Structures are given as structure tokens and as C-alpha cells.
Length: 329
Image 1 (cartoon, rainbow, N blue to C red):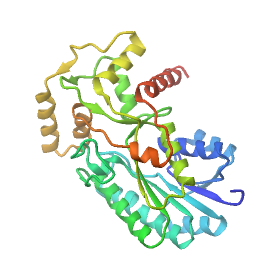
Image 2 (image 1 turned 45 degrees about the vertical axis):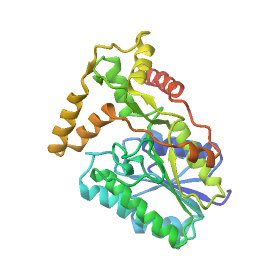
Image 3 (image 1 turned 180 degrees about the horizontal axis):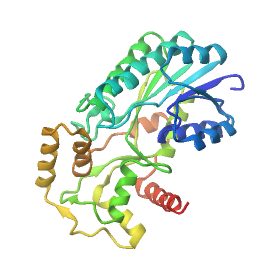
Image 4 (image 1 turned 120 degrees about the vertical axis):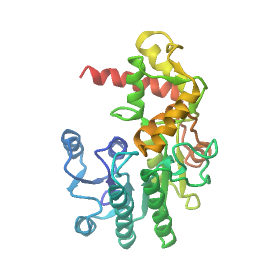
């Protein structure tokens, strides 16, 4: 590894920052493409720890030509993306998530990269999978622009595998952990303020500890298994939304989440129908995530990677401790 680099995209994002930290802790030489970012302190920390940072867009041919000319890149971990429903316009999703992935795949193939790992999403199954638990083989269901872009990007990865690139796809569920500012931290904040309304039914959701997700990428970096190309990344088991709310509330107040903060299931169905009619993907996804079950069969992937997943009950408690620490900084 002394003269070889691992090229990582999306290093200033939540998942990417943890993957870079893991790589550096394992003495990998990291090469990161970064663009103008508010996370300058984090970028400077990576540079201090030995990462080589290149300014620019990861899908810029000139930037990539410079990188592959000046450095021996043995691995690529591609995490950068316009993420989440409602966070971009369709052109953004296509340019970054689809076209950008293809450009990086092309340069990786042409320059003999030994291993290419693409961070996809369980969103390729849709916000709510058609079968539960969803499997690696579960059919795609592109129910919004973001999910469709991840599907198209996966198709590009598979095309380049057929061309001879040693590439792998990771489909993580929603991650929680230090630095999160997405669904898990929003959920914790709503529960703390007693503003989360839950359905009466016990829906089950499936998250992943971001530290374990970083381990998934590390395991694929060293796997000799070239038969299995797609892995689902999730905690050991799903957890009910009510149980997770109880854990959060008990952490702050020592008691379960108030049972009166519930609504009949049909109210969530009506809201989902309304936001679907309005084509408001952002709020439709939010309603579905707290009112429907979504979980995955990740045991086979974990076994093939010799990975021991976290239990959400314990992992989320650690996350809550981190949230408290962050709030006092």
C-alpha cells in the first residue's frame, strides 16, 4: 500500500468522512477529490492526517486525468452523490449520480484500478420495498428522481463489470452516528420535543451504524470474492419505530415515549396520498418512513463479508450520547 492510493469521493459527507477516517486508521493512503465546502475544518483534519486532497469535481475529466497521471490509484470508493428525495432537480441527479459515476468508471477501467466500490442505496427498491425483507434480488422500484438515479448508476456499474472492471455495489440503509444531520438526528430531535406523531400500528424500520458501514467498505477492499458483487448494509435487525422512540425518550427523560402521541394509520395514508398527488417527494418520503415498514435481509451480505453488524438498540444509544456531546461543544 505504500505507493498506492485509494481514491475516495464524497469525503466531506456523512458517510464519506467516516470511510476516510477508517482508511487512514488502517494506514491506507487516501486521495480525495473535494470541491468548495463548508467543512473546511474536516478537510484540513484529513490533510493533517496524511490524506492528499485535490480540488475539483470528481467527474471532471481534467481533474481525473491529472489524478491518474500523477498517482497510482489501486482502489476507488465512490460515495459522492446528490442525496435524498427533493434535494435536487432531475438534471442534478443525472449529472452527478449517473453521468458522474460513468465518468469515474471509465477512468477507473482505462487506468487499471484494482477495485471499484460504489455506494448505492436501498432506495433502489423504492422508499418502501415491494417485499419484506427486501433481498439483493428484490426488483428495482424507482419511485422518485433520486432513487431512479441510483438505479441508473448501478446499471452503469454492472456494465463496467462486464467490461472487466472489478467493481462492487453497496446498498446501505439510512445510517446514524457521529456527525449525522439527516433522518436519525431529526427523529431524535422530534422525540425529545415530543413532536413526533406515530401510527398506531407497529411498523419496523432498518438503520445502520455508520461505523459498521465504514467496515463494510473496508471488508470489500480486501475480499477475494468476485462472484458476489452487491451487498446490503444494515444493522443486525429491524426495530419498531415505537421502540426507537422509547429508547430516545428514555435517554433524555427516563420514561417511554408518551402513548398519546399517536394517530390512526389512515391519517398517514391520507397524508401520503396528498403529498404524492402534489408530487412533493420530500414530504412523501418523510411520511412513509415513519408510517410504513421497511427492512432488509442483510444477514447474507454480512456473512459473506465476515462482518458482525450492530444491534440498533445499542448503536443508537451510543449515537444519542454523541448527540449530547455535540450539543455541548
